[in-house]
Amino acid sequence: MKLILRSDRKGVGKRGDIVNVADGFARNYLLPKGHAIKASDGAVSQANAMRRARDLRDSQDRESAQTLASALVSKTITIAVKAGAEGRLFGSVTASDVAAAVEAQTKIVLDRRKLHVDHIKSIGTYNVIARPHHDVEFPISIEVVAK
Image (cartoon, rainbow, N blue to C red; front, side):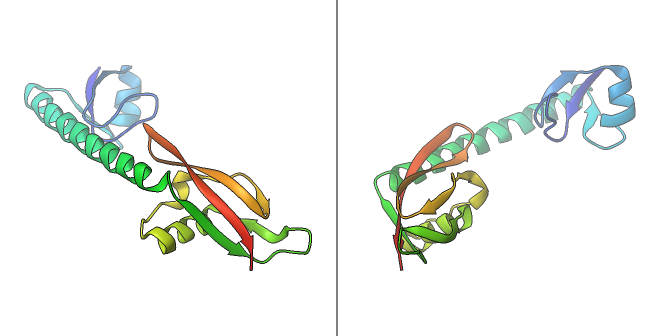
């Protein structure tokens, strides 16, 4: 059955895509839940408009992520935490801590869910991977110091 997706579906397609799916999958899942509509001539032109809007929004998001990357790659973010005598932290540095430190020091707001932080449990310099867009990934240099 030929359908137009109204929302992103993993393994099927993205919003506005025209897809061919099994009749049962369309009839029992996609159509009743409102994830898709049947592809008619008018709906196809509407799907083209949805795809154009999606592509425009995606390119704008990619550009803003690249400007964000160019602003943050050259900087080193310092995070002051409580630590013991040997340099071991009381706890660990999390993605929320990194996002808050970036915002405090550079006024750039990052989503903590877009940061990949390995286990930081001692004082030192680390690289945290930020992925604000699926095509843009860059390291942020983090320096963890004792209070």
